[in-house]
Image (cartoon, rainbow, N blue to C red; front, side, top):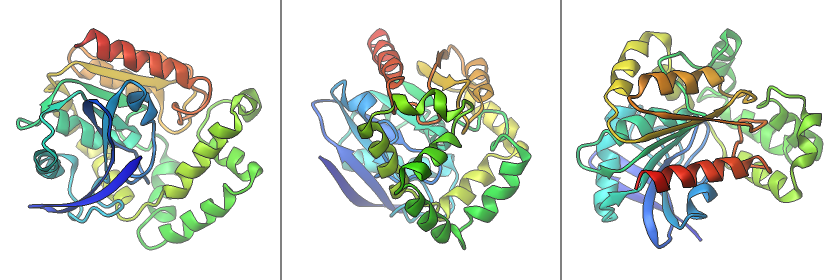
Length: 289
């Protein structure tokens, strides 16, 4: 059962979604266009018995803290952990743009973070989005003034099988004919449900601001200071985030472990290829106990 809560912090209100389990918790930071309720692979961790605390990052969902950077938002994350009495954090997990928050959170002096995991993360020291066309279109199509119209159209689109396939195919470097039929109806419904929870709010514009090339040196300095065991996963077939980011994270974070997945899309937790991600996470958590 997923519980959604709004917690007050010194920086403002923070929205979280909690999935309780017996094991130590994981702090989960979903990617762009996603709020705390967007399931971007919770099962990889709940399936291993871990609780998950998912956050709406600045600009997303019910979080009301202004356009803070990842580092600036860390004190609010710390206060949430204090309020929930989370003493030991099994891992801080960032998916896609969630890396912006996961990295500085893993370096918190107040939270006992044991590990950092970045799944299909961006930006590394490289700028993101990866192409000039994406960098130009993103602020227009998903900007605060028009994003509601964009996501209403996407919600209608994914209501059809053809539309859902087309949207998922846009997140892959492979022809959809090579992998779409391997997705069960349950897999497809999981993707559809996720897309229908998505909205850009002010968060996507805030993400883009932090991911520019002119912040590359700052991101490098931050990544070089990560001190906990770190797992990086990515796929060369990912049409949402170039595999070069995974390689760059692994080259920049001291001692980071890079595992290349064969996921056909950016949605690495959906479909039969998700088994490899599950095994990778389980091995990493076990070996770094």
